[in-house]
Image: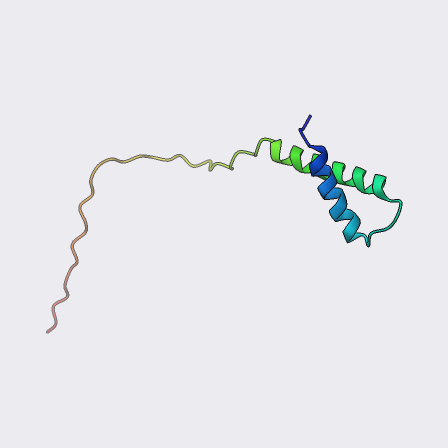
Length: 77
């Protein structure tokens, strides 16, 4: 169960009511819609995130130092 306060629901319901044109007698519907939205958002945020997809390729760690390749110069005749 998520902890959603009455104040959170009230604020969301008021925003929904305003967005709906401030209709009279629809307070219960807006309250229920606000509760539903907040509950869904809280559950989505609480759900564990899927682990990042890992490659099937192996990673080889090579600690040996590598000398930079020397640049060959072409002779101009």
